[in-house]
Length: 288
Image 1 (cartoon, rainbow, N blue to C red):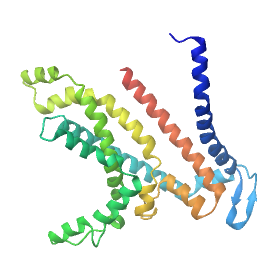
Image 2 (cartoon, rainbow, N blue to C red; image 1 turned 45 degrees about the horizontal axis):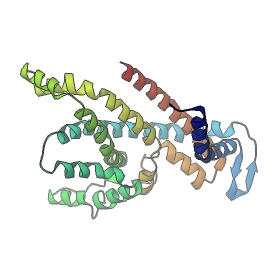
Image 3 (tube, helix red, strand yellow; image 1 turned 135 degrees about the vertical axis):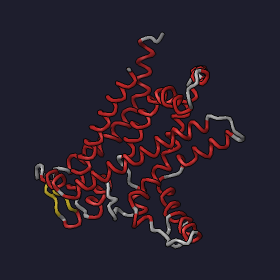
Image 4 (cartoon, helix red, strand yellow; image 1 turned 30 degrees about the vertical axis):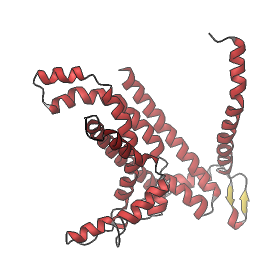
């Protein structure tokens, strides 16, 4: 059992790391909060330290805010549908005995370790390129007109790219849950004459519900800040501008630091609201 001396020593040893972490997080946040109440446009030489909530009012009442918020929700919802649905299917398939099972699992999980920028470049140039992309060659082989995914279906294209990155994560979590399921339950249900669909619906899916909620929580928190894939593929055009990308445009492209900072604070508040809602929802699920 830890003594008071050992507890004090432990706190003393972790104190520097905690201090650095707090400074690393708090200083940018406090600076963003400060600039959100200022009129700061460095390219024009404008700096007024206090203008109240004008930046927040301007950001929240702009038509770009509503459209970017809707785009963010559609994008996150589409990615979650693909990753959760595909993750369940892949987890069930990978749980079956097969030749080279270990290699197959590594290949399935591999996309999760690819940097978002690299992943977006690969999909943009190797698959979605209207002239030399793989899909264009397939369309030509079928006698069809090549389809420009990034300009004709830009939102779907980004959803596919990001879902490809996050599908391994969902598969890994759900595969762990599938492997924890007792085979005796499935065997007993099969002996009682239950079909494969009935076993999935009444045994496997309820068992996976907790893992699914965890996947949704973790992915949602990260997916609300999608940026690299949009920057590399569409630059926020064709209706793909999310809330995070809108903040980037206000800060760097428009050089309005105050307005962009207000947008960043709004984005942080909305992300925390979503996270708190999901944590409570998952807490109820775990307690059930």
